[in-house]
Amino acid sequence: MKNIKKVYEKLGEFLVDLLKADQPGKGKQELREELTALRAGSNETVRDYYIRKFSTVLMVLSAGIFLSGVCFLAYMEKTSNVEDQILMRPGYGEENRQEELTVEVDGKEVQQLEITVQARTYTDQEMHELTEKAIAELEQILPGKNESLDEVRDDLVFPKTLMDGAVEVSYVTTPYGVVDEDGVLSDVEKEDGILTEIQVTLTCGETETVHIIHARVFPRILTHEEQLQKEIRKAVEQKDASGRYEDTLKLPENVDGRALIWQYQEENPFTTVLALALIAAVLVYLEMDSRVHTRAEERKNQLMLDYPDLMWKMTMLLGAGLTIKGTFTRMAKQYYKDRRKLRYVYEEVLYTCREMESGVSEAEAYERFGRRCGLPEYIRLGSVLSQNLKKGTRGLTSLLEEEAVSSMTDRKNNARKLGERAGTKLLFPMILMLGIVMVILMVPAFLAF
Image (cartoon, rainbow, N blue to C red; front, side, top):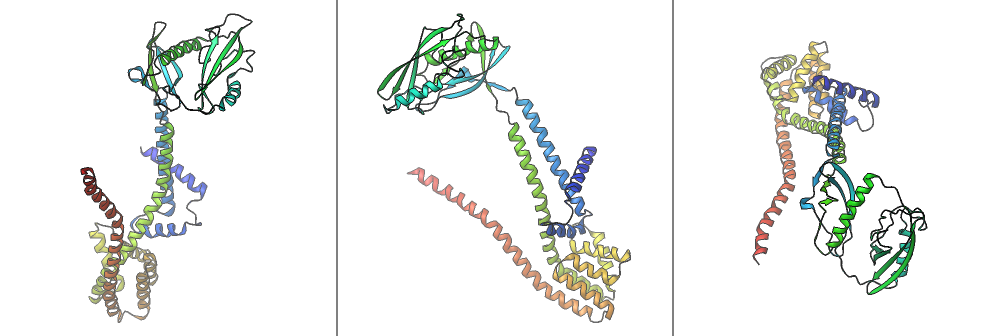
């Protein structure tokens, strides 16, 4: 697991270098400042953050692609049995429905078929003048894949309706058995073909028009699969025709003594899972930035609330005779000893002490402390501490005491503002709850009438 994580971290590092994501740029300044500010409680740099971010997104994408592949393989051949070998027909006035099914013959051989389930027969009141246009449309559709009706070697197309359903069509072919009522060719042995008459009856409302079309049908060579599909399809069509006034279509259970088991082709969730993985990766990418902004806002609020506490501690320690550096050292040691929860201001105090131990001048360390905290109060405090080192600490205690008293008032104001924000966020859930209560009260009242 650790090795896999290292691989993704290497890939994330490669993408960061390739895209120069950790370099300053438009729209990145605020995020970089927040990440730098949050380093007080973490050793993570801006570069480390982007490496972690890209590696996390890559892991989410990899997991999504893997799951998509598993779904693709698992559902590629998955089917479910048609319950009781029955398909529901479309209702009156609805269009015919195509069903993609597989049929298992004798428990071994599996065939895939597209079955047309016709709508229940009903009488339409249609316009008589559409009939002539329907004949022209039929003559274009009927040849199907054949170049012309003078040489028919593939199934003809016998549409059941024309003109967007305005005209119903039925077919009678002569001689019988060469072309069935759906345009499917049967076996023809004559090499010179058989001249077939197709009598087309077009019904539009109360009007019936008979139109005659001739076609010469030649033999075609059928594979074993095509022959089997043809026999199964014919059996389905016979069942369909015999039960067209029923609500259901009873599929044939055998053909030529061979058992048939009908199954639905299960929908493969491959594309859905892949799309969800891509969405998840984008959301993770955005969520990580959102968390940084949230943590930065929490840090800012915490610094504002902790400012009076820092002032009182500094006032008491300075009043006890400690130097400014001694005060910082004492607070840092106490915080480090009792640290249970992250407090950003004391993390900055601890960091300031370490800077002074590493050789940074005391005055510069206090100014850096104020700038890292970022709030005007801390910047002002850092400047005051730095200046008092140069001109002496006389009067510093009283100055900090006044600042502490003033900061308490500011803390109350800040606490009130935070409370108002929390109340505003709760407003929408409260409105939803009110709506639910209204529904609970009003629905029974309406049902009682």
